[in-house]
Image (cartoon, rainbow, N blue to C red; front, side, top):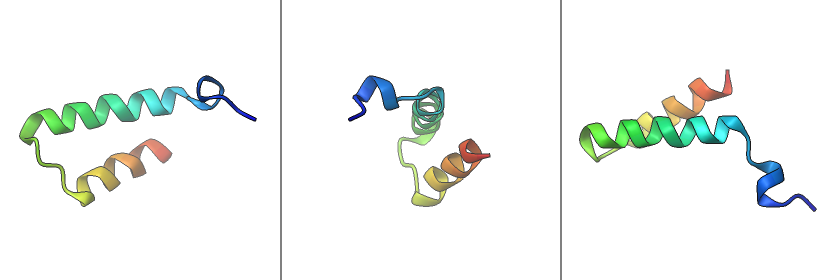
Length: 43
């Protein structure tokens, strides 16, 4: 069984940073904005 620490990656860290930055701009992220960040990190 994987622990939280074993399954957490740098991509997860980047996602949190990008979401935090995006949220701080207008505090109202749409689903489309979250999806765009997610899609960009998958590439």
